[in-house]
Image (cartoon, rainbow, N blue to C red; front, side):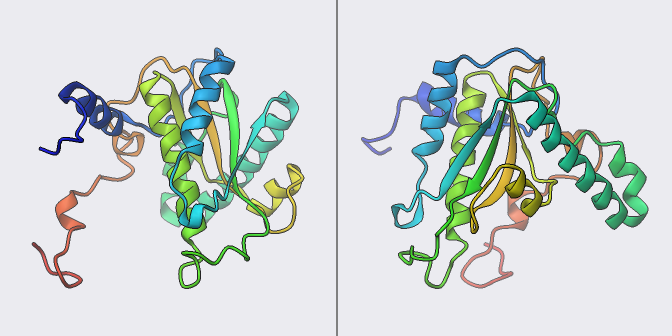
Length: 216
């Protein structure tokens, strides 16, 4: 084992947070203390980013009326998504897809504007700014789980409509509505598995060796 490894207890805690992280939809209201929210956002801000461009921007939603308007945008897209699903439409409409009204905090995670000048690491893969934002969100998610808070990532919305609602400049793009706060309990498995919407596939199906499709 590397001399730089954490203690066994610390390693176990990290793997536990990864394994028990859940995309939460059910919240218990309450509050997130300012110092705790600060720690969580600091964890997000420590995420890796290509070329150190740090493309993430977080908007904390503190106005109840604005929260309701965001929820309305999500509901509009939920209906459109159900229509697009065809025969699974009714089944989809039974799923709980967001906890905006009940969670303690709502954050909108977005990509910054004026990203084009950032070429380092993005010349052939411009999507790396989105990958960097996803790393920041994952940091926030894992830190929240370690602190005993639930978090849910909501992606059912029209990004242009949400950008206009939040006064974002041209080029900036909202990528996630994050619901954060206390929960009564964490799901024992991903909610979509519990609801029998989908089944998690094993790592062995996603792992190739040397050539695409060749199993180790």
